[in-house]
Amino acid sequence: MKTLKYIFAIAILSISFVSCSSDKDDDPIISNPVEGLNKIYEFTEADHSVEIYTEKTSLEVGYNEISIRIKDMTSDKYITNAEATWMPMMHMETMSHSAPHSMLSNAEHNTVYKGHIVFQMASNATEYWDVTLNYNLNGQAVTETHEVSVIQPADGLKKVQVFLGSDAVKYVLAYVNPKKPQVAINDFQAVLYKMEDMMTYPVVENYKVTVDPRMPGMGNHSSPNNQDLTYNAATKMYNGKLSLTMTGYWKINLKLLNESGDVLKGEDVTESNPESSLYFELEF
Image 1 (spheres, helix red, strand yellow):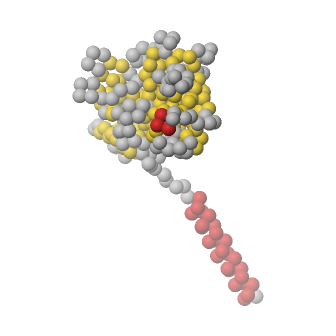
Image 2: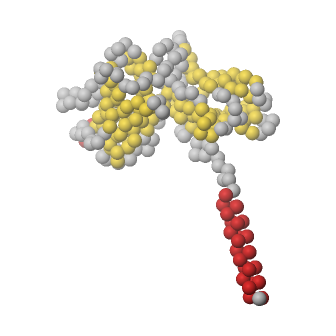
Image 3: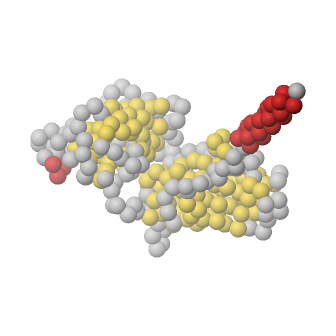
C-alpha cells in the first residue's frame, strides 16, 4: 500500500510539472515590431511623438520602406487606431511636386504604420523634402509636416528610373528586391507608377517589364532562366526572376511594354547595341 501511495504521489508531481511547463511554453512572447529597423527620426510634440524607421540608415533616392509609430505621452503607449495617411513633397526653387507612394497600413502590426515612398531626387542646399502626416490622436485630427533628408545611395548605382514613355506619359520605375542578391535565381521585384500631375502618381497595372541582365566587364554575357516582371494585383508590385551567375557588376537591361505589347521605353541588347536606355544596376 505504501508503494502504491508513493507511485501515486510521483505521478501527481509529474503531471503538475508538465502542466506548469506547458503553461510557461504557452506564455505569449512580447516581440519588438520594429526590431532590426533603424529609427532615423523622432519628432516630439507636447503630448505625443512620431517615430520613423527604415531598414537603411537614411532615406535614399529610389524605393524606401518606411515604418511609423505614434506614441501617446500621457499613456506611454503607441497608438493603434490613428488611421494615418501621408504626403511626401519636394520643394524646389521654382516648383513643388510629390512622389510615388503607397498608403500607410497597420495590418501587419497594429502599432506600426507601414508603407513606401519612391523619392525621385535627393535633397540639396536649396531644395528639400518634407512629409505631411495626418492621423487621429485620442479622437482629435492632427496634421504635422516634418522636413526629411534624402540622399543619393552610397554605392551610386541606378535603382530608380524617371522617364517619358513613347506614349508621352512620365513613368517612375523603381527597384525593390532582391535587397541582398545571391548567385542564384533571385526573386525580382519593382514598382511602376505614372505621373498624372505634380501631386498624383497612380500605380500602373498589367504592363510588363522584360529582363535581360548583362555583365559589361565580362563580355556583356547574360544569364539563363530570367522571368519578366509582371503585375501582382495583391501587392501592387511587379514580380519576376533575376538570374545572377556570378558576383560582380550587373546591368539589368529592361524594356517597358504596355498591355498591347507596345514598347514604351527601352531597347533589345544586341552586338551593335550593348545596353538598353532603361536599366537598373547591381553590384555584389
